[in-house]
Length: 68
Image 1 (cartoon, rainbow, N blue to C red):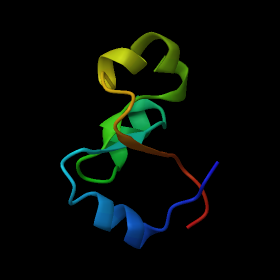
Image 2 (spheres, rainbow, N blue to C red):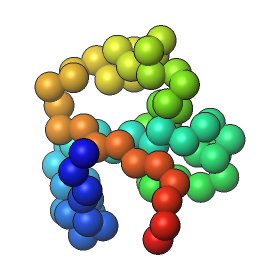
Image 3 (cartoon, one colour):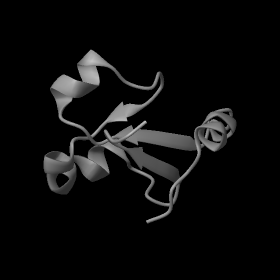
């Protein structure tokens, strides 16, 4: 899995084709998220991935909690 820097995410967010996905639980998404990101908790990926991400060939980056 590749890591992406904060500056790279900010740069890529300028592209309308870029999709940023928060894979934390829905409660964590409500408490704090990167503006413009989509919520798709890890537990929901099998059931909702195609609904939330209809174009799997898009430029998609996922993020979750971790050291900052």
